[in-house]
Image 1 (cartoon, helix red, strand yellow):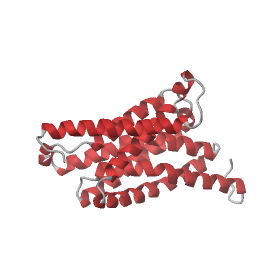
Image 2 (spheres, rainbow, N blue to C red; image 1 turned 90 degrees about the horizontal axis):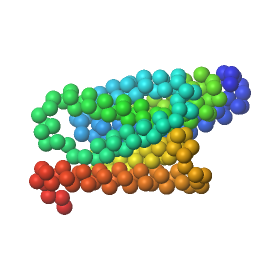
Image 3 (spheres, helix red, strand yellow; image 1 turned 90 degrees about the vertical axis):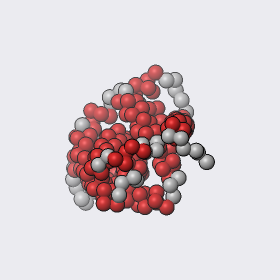
Image 4 (cartoon, one colour; image 1 turned 45 degrees about the vertical axis):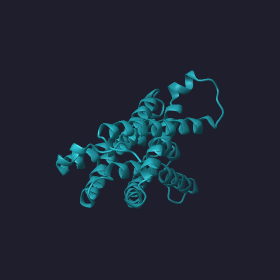
Length: 233
């Protein structure tokens, strides 16, 4: 598709890319909010800035190789499993000994979590945007530019909500599990060995992923708290 600002087809594709970014960037914002929730306000701003900067750099690489990534089997399976692990880890309580660690270590730990999780979760985003862009590099870059402020703005909003409603951490982890379940189910290698399934099967896979994260996360949380002699009310 040519960069024709007078073309209706071009602007329809632009609208599709914006909607895709709005829907899919919220998941990335949850990761940022979860990773930075235990940092001080100053460190949160730094964590969001550097985390998003690293995530955007990886997003550029993924966008460039979108055509190759789109048809690679087993890539989403590996990414989905990694995302489940990240979601479960984010549910676990902090180690009591962690208070003696310098703040910079906590900050860059949050940045690392953001970058790794965004790399995993951006696969669906990049693939969807690449499809809507119809091979246009200009539209691909436009989609990337739109996703940056969406991620930054929504992550700060979710951080504010987490301070008022701590239960959002659990809901956020469940959302990551839902995304992971759908990623695994939609992997070309997985679908090739499965029989023909109805369209709602993808949603069921997402629900299973969410339940898996919540159940495993809660079980590990109880074990860790019990080891620390903390009574769970």
